[in-house]
Length: 278
Image 1 (tube, helix red, strand yellow):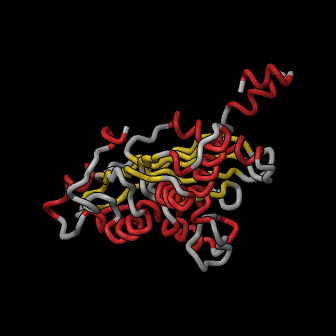
Image 2 (cartoon, rainbow, N blue to C red):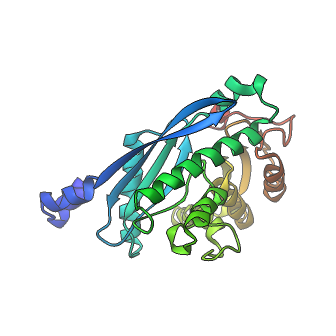
Image 3 (cartoon, rainbow, N blue to C red):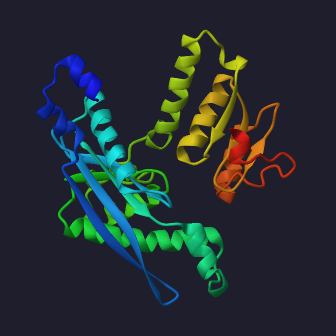
C-alpha cells in the first residue's frame, strides 16, 4: 500500500486513513458445556466505511488473532473498493479450538465430533448475535461467512433482525438470498487459475491440481477446475486427504464430503496428509 501510495502521490495522512482500522471491539462469548462455562474470545475489526457499511466475514478457527483479523478487514476495504461496491471493510475473528474442546468433554458427552461442533457453534453464535444487535451494529457492519462459519450461522442474524440487508450469505431460499453466492468464491478461484494458465500458455489438460481445504471454497474451486479439464490429483482437509495420480472424481468426492463432512476415508488405500500435499 505504501509503494502504491508513493507512485500515486497520495499524502501520508490519507494513506493512514486506509491503513489503520477505525475500531476494534472485543467480546467475550460465554458458552455452557456440561455445566461448565467457557469464555470464548472474539473480536470485530471495523476498518473503513468511507464507501459504505463495514463488510466482511466471520472467521471461526483455533489460530485467529487480532493482527490477522485486522489485515483481513483491510483487505475487505480494498476489495470492495476495487469492485466499485458501496461497502467498506471489516472482519470478525472467533478463537475456538473444537478438537481440543471435544477431547476435553468427550467422555462426558453422548455426541459425535460434528454434533459437538454444531452445538458449540450454535451457542457461541447466538451469544455473538445478541451482543452484535445490542451494540447497534446492524447495517453498520454487514457480516458474511468465512472459514469456520456457514449459511447456518448467518441465518441466526436474520432470525434476530428479520432484515435481509443485515447479513449476506444466507441459506438458499431465504429473503435476500443471492443465487450463485454459495459457489462464487470457489468459482473465482478457478477462474483466476484458468486465466493464469492461459497467460503462461498452458491448457487445463496439461496440469495437475492439488487442493488444500475442501469446504465451500475449495470444493467448488476443485469442481470448476475439474470441469475445465484439469486433473485434480490430491485433496486434503483438516482431518485427512486423498491422492489419485490418475485424477479424483470431484463430484463424487463432493457428495462424500457433504455426507461425512470430511474427505478423510473417501479412499482408505490412497491417502495423503497436508504435508504430503505440499
